Image (cartoon, rainbow, N blue to C red; front, side, top):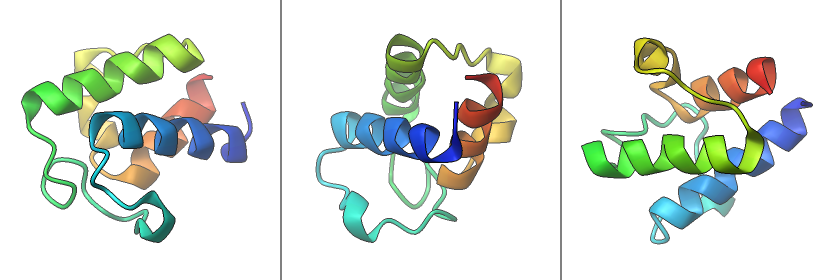
Length: 80
């Protein structure tokens, strides 16, 4: 999966989980839980949507790698 495809998938998933987040002005260094204010259930839903739409399963042991939007894009790009 290209970086552009991964970015599009991540932005779409973020929009589905947190529709109030403006993905047009989203800083990619934004932290998913703190800056985007995703609670634990939102984060799990985000990971679930990524798995459903891209086929990239994120095991719990890898959650530390996807703290930021950039981290999630990179993870999806590498594993997708």
